[in-house]
Length: 282
Image (cartoon, rainbow, N blue to C red; front, side, top):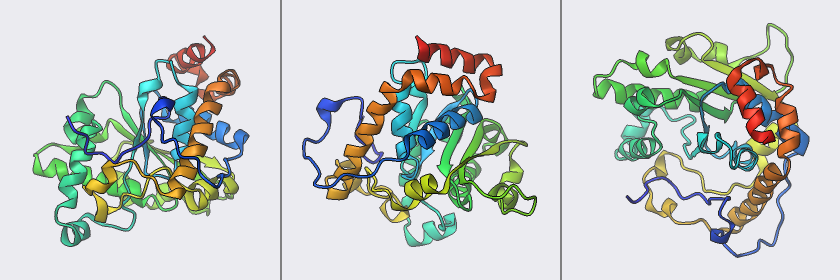
């Protein structure tokens, strides 16, 4: 079956990567910061399938794909090229009438339709860099609207969906702004469905604001655009692809170090997490 999801290079198949060499080199995230973030995301997400949302967490996805290569967790990671921050569903329907149908097709191919979420062997955790939580809110809105059309109780799939927001470190004051306290849509989920992983500002700023990305953005105006099905070959995409491949190989080379880092996480009290660490060490 022909894929309807935007093209994304498979870094585990170097022989299939574009051969062109970029004229520039993209700065990689600080290795220690990225490793700590990756370890904390796995620990925080729990025994689940992880779906990295949009382009911001690309580096985290690529590093983990390398680190977890060959393990039982290798197929638990996915990258969903979805961008809808600031786009309520009613506005998308008005401005781009066919966009929602196209994005539903992409969710279905990824196994993320409401009915598929219910039937999956494990819960799904959406992971993204978060400022306001609006992108997560748009995912919930899309799924809830879909459920209403199919007469499916959203409480069923919401019980199997969680969110991990990667936020930049800030004051721990009770008065500090927290997206989880402002996102009213989260009230429909069980307590504890949204958790945060904090990272240093330089890492958050690089991933979220300044880093070249492997793929073009996929906002509502491009949902279903056939141009996104072809490999991107713009210079900025090739620069990003070169860096992504380096991160993937770094993850594979750092497996012992990463396993040691995981062993210091709180989740080590859980059998599934200990099994993951043992798998990495093997």
